Length: 101
Image (cartoon, rainbow, N blue to C red; front, top):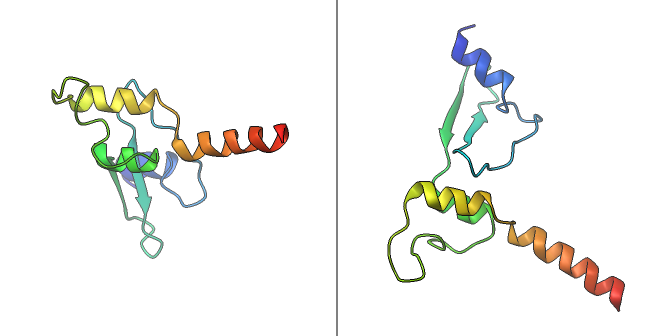
């Protein structure tokens, strides 16, 4: 077993392992595991678009600033890492609405 494989299997590459949150401080790698290939797998970084989709935002939501200027990838990842996923927010707010009514 080579070092990369050990790092992969020791991280979050297996199907039932927990998946870490998207961090604002740096890009978190995304790993997936090939079921029929125990030595196989891939680690890559999510794109800005994929991260926006995971957060429940439309494609390109963080691409432009308020004045229409392009936002750097680093700043986009930071903004997404410091935000709350919309599906989570909707779920929480729906629970509050039901408890009030």
